[in-house]
Length: 445
Image (cartoon, rainbow, N blue to C red; front, side):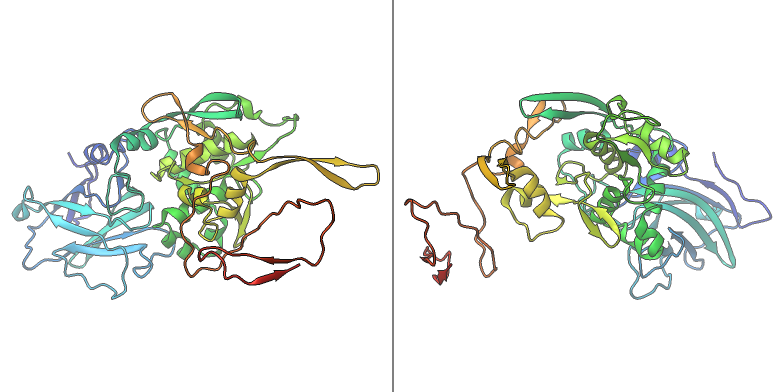
């Protein structure tokens, strides 16, 4: 059965995208069985019927895929390939697709069964596909390409199948709110397989400020899950024009929905899309986090291995965003690495200080609690609804420090001394010594 037939005496007389079969093999059938949605780095099947016989030794079938408004081979947003692959491409072409003629083809009757593979580093998004044979070129189809956690060559590859099922395929999760001693688990429907979810996610990418500034470069950069993650953290908040959610930490929720009334991400995103990109009222920290989880999952970005905080933190080329930050870097205090690790490191390692303000305005530190902040960081366990304490993944135990040797790297250390005598000491000379840790300079204060 051919879903699409061509007329006007075209050499192209039929096309079968095998959407149901392809989507099942690409684990996207829960999203759609009608629209073709594939994962990069994995082949999908396409059957093309031609009016004349196809002679591989003499004929050249050229396929073209494009994404974005300004497709370019050099940017990876356009690829030309074919059967046989004698296509003339730019010497600096990126993200080249490929097609292979399958044994089930019948070239003598014009039936070509092709296995088409998007490269594991191509930009994610919606693509238009066309074909050219001889002097005739014909638009064939539109398809969506997602990241692929099952592909070892993809940056988002996740080797553990149980974790892939939990973080990519599972629509339901648990958000942990409250404080460390009174944890409030809230069940949440992420809804990544709901109708139009992929299209909504693509709208979000197209509406970000970087796309407005340079659409060609933005689309090209969507090959990188780190870039896409930063766009998502930008678009989640209304502080960036057109952002999805408007925050409200007070008690006045007039004109919107109280944050505690939300139980799923899809309703929020659908409302944002239907309102022509007006921010949805209202959200608080866990609502931001839950929607980000959906957006990461819908694009198949592994949503646990890195930290993406839904906070307005850093201004990156006119957009506020935070993360993604490697969890191991947060734990080890590698604040020189990207992205925004000093901010997140401080959030889980801060001290809680109680100050006494005197009548004259002076302040006295009466208590410092270095344990209170960053306790019982929690997530849902893989395959069960049990809570898993992941605090040790984000921070060292209090009083314990273990860092890689900072060889040939400048670093700043803060040393706190407690004066053992009652007198106030001034103009002291301090000598720092250690096994290769310091240079032994004389420090005078």
